[in-house]
Amino acid sequence: MVNRNRSQGWTHAKISGHENEKNILELLNSDAEFKENLEGFFNAPMKEFNIGGLNEKGVNSVFDKSLTKSKTDLKITSENKTLKFSIKKSRGGQVYLISIPRFIYGIKKQFNLDLNASELKAIKLFFGEDSEEVNKIINSKKTMMINEKIKSYERRKLRLTVKSIESYDEGLAKALLNFFRKNSREIFLFCFSRGLATEESDWAEYLWYINTIKDDNDAKLNKIFEIKRLASNIKNSDDLEFGTRNGGTTIQLPFGFVQWHQGQIQFHHNYKKICSLYIE
Image (cartoon, rainbow, N blue to C red; front, top):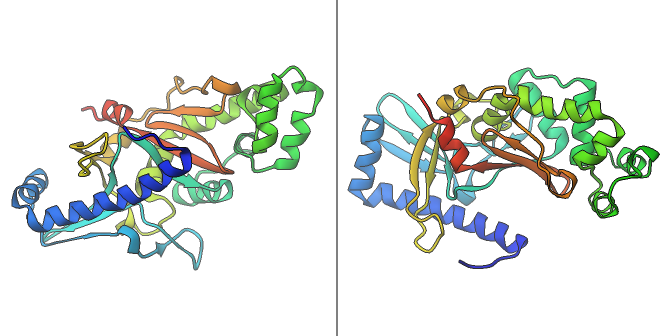
């Protein structure tokens, strides 16, 4: 296993991800057994296939006159249908990184989902959209008992942990968790299928965990999930919870977790959790 710092890790993930997609395209073109197995899975012969890769073109987005990246990495066309895949090379990692305003507007447009005032404020505090209010709360009497190590982190990142939000206003912490609890199915579809793309033809239908890179930790990973079926098994459960480390900087989700990353919302996927959702 190669040890990489965070920056090196993201660079490796991006480059190896595109390498993985390139390998898949080569296998579809040259490996008859690989192609036949995929055709057998869908009971349909392939006519053509296309992978976005580094030269992926933008598609229409929920923001007027603006393009976005499709969540579909691979399109396979048969005689009467097109199959659309989101490809994941590893069992865990980033599935979506998005700014707070784009997330709030995007999920509203995709699912007609409006956040109430408490949810909106809590999200902005937790993910660092309102730095003035964050600093005000860090220095307030209500949070004066918070560990200085946690406060130092919050000042550096200009965001609040769960402990500080709870100390300031317990109702805001409940609103934050409740938002992810009651909308976890829509958030899953937003992250894995739709993103900001407006056209259904650009929405991914299948999640394909496949790793074709020999020296990678997840080499030989190969399993396909229908996204609609995964979503149907996500319940608006009360068992979702905040992470407990460092004052609470993450929220556990049915498909992974979400955290702050460089002033944005970063959703992570988890293969084990995905498998647990794929039930009859």
